[in-house]
Every structure is written in structure tokens, then in C-alpha cells.
Image (cartoon, rainbow, N blue to C red; front, side, top):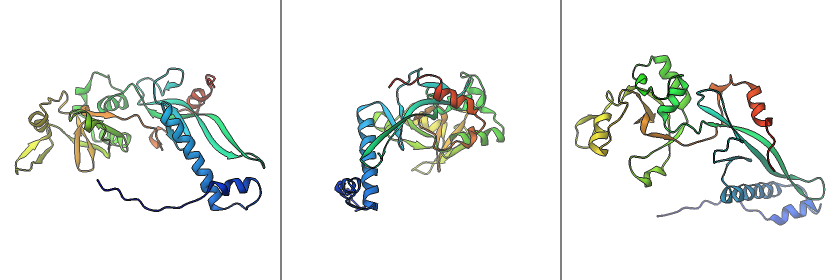
Length: 255
């Protein structure tokens, strides 16, 4: 395996020390030193503790009802309470660590596959996967908006492939029974038959729409959701601010 390294920049933490001691003016090197210390802080937290880092916000990976609140009955999202931590200037004599409580939006951790997400989004029973076989175009578009950017992994290829994550680009109108593609020997085969022939996997919901990843298609039921924080969530803009506020301030964080 070949690894290529590209030179980015260099700095000396002494620049930061000199600036604090008023022996040197502010400079890009000083800012780079401060950013470096924040990165070290983030790395030390996520390596030793079960937290996920989002910029300078940290959220628990494990489920704890004290820190997790559902976005509503059958909601596809949940609120996780975490904390913000960053190194800032400490007046004129040094540095300080700023610490505060924050709230992040995650996929609902009670969901495991995209088919569960789809049923929640459409307000259908968790065991009614067969109902996804007859969706109108507006429902397909709605699901596509919700899953676009969703990270998922698959399990039917063994543990090594589970570590590989994919990013969904939308939902197809076609199902595993309808969608066909050409194999390496030139024959055409449906996604449904391909899974049976190649992986000995019989799909429970072969008539549900497929998850798209570019030009590749996956059955919803084999796409396992990677819990991930929403960097943006325009489709959830109707969430009440009071719910977010309650999630952030409803209980005191144990410090």
C-alpha cells in the first residue's frame, strides 16, 4: 500500500506562548496553534471516551435515556444532549477551556435499517414493510429527501464489509423485483434474483423501493443506518423550538 503525504503548513507552539506573554503580535501561526490544541482536545476525548465529535461539540455514542429524547412518536430523529468544549483566550494572561451544554439532532437510535426509517417517515406501523410496495411519486420524493446524505452499511458480505459505509443519494421508484442490471457475462438479472443467487439471501420485502447510491441500488432492508448527526436538516424545520429547548435544559447535566 502506498501512502502519499502532502505538505500543508507548519507552526511552533512557542508562537502562542510568546503571544500570550505579549512578546509577539497575533499571527496566522498563533491561530493555527490554538486550532491544533482544540484538535488535540477533541482527539483525546473521542479516543478514550464513548463520544462522537462534531466540530467542537461532543455527544454520547451509547444510548442513555437521561441524555436522549425522541423527536416525537414514531419520529425518525432524536435529540441527544452533549457538551461544547473549546480552548479560548483567557483574558490577557493565558488560555481557558469553555464548557457548555448543547443539543444535537441524530437519527433515531431505535431504528436499524432504512426500511424502519421509511416506515417512520410515512407514519406506518413498524411491521408493515409490505405497504412500501405501492407508494405514490410524492411519497417517493419525500423519502428521497429524508435519506439523501444518510450513511449506511451492509451486513450480508461479512464483517470486513460492515466497516465500509455508503452515502445514500435517494430512493428509486423501482423495487428489487423490478430493477434489473447486466452481469459480467452479459445476462440481465433482477436485484431480487441476484441476492438469492449470489448471497443466498431472500428479501422479505422485494417490492419496496430501492436505496440509491449513485448508480448502485440496495434493498432497504439490508441497509443498516450509521447513527449520524445532521449537519443540516431543512426537512425538519417544523420541529418545535420548545422541544429542542426542553431537551437541552430539561435535566441538569452531571458534570
